[in-house]
Image (cartoon, rainbow, N blue to C red; front, side):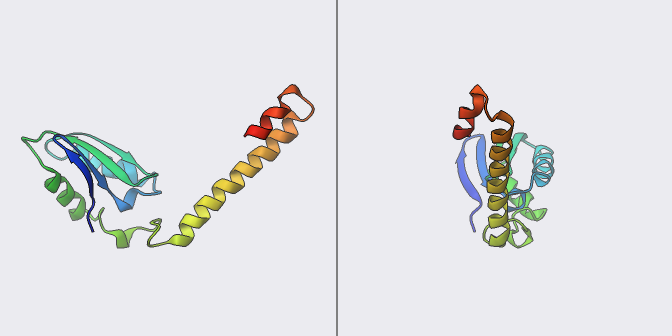
Length: 125
């Protein structure tokens, strides 16, 4: 599996399965990457499961960054509990949770704003 999504000199985007839907895993990967020689900054997105790494080309390379992630087990899709491919029920439950939360918010807003000029706003939420 290819984890490299995109690269330009000094910047690379990598898919990291262990951070997808794992807000707690993102800081661990970010800290790991930012301790590597030549890595200037890492930005992790747990929603997409991708990491953007800014690095000094004279000190490191995308291959070295990927190797460090593999070495620490962050590119091992089998370790992932929330991955779509490994756990489609978890993904469905997350989406269902979002739908239920939005419905509850709408009911609460409707009740709170009933018979007020703002009651029309609940239609758009």
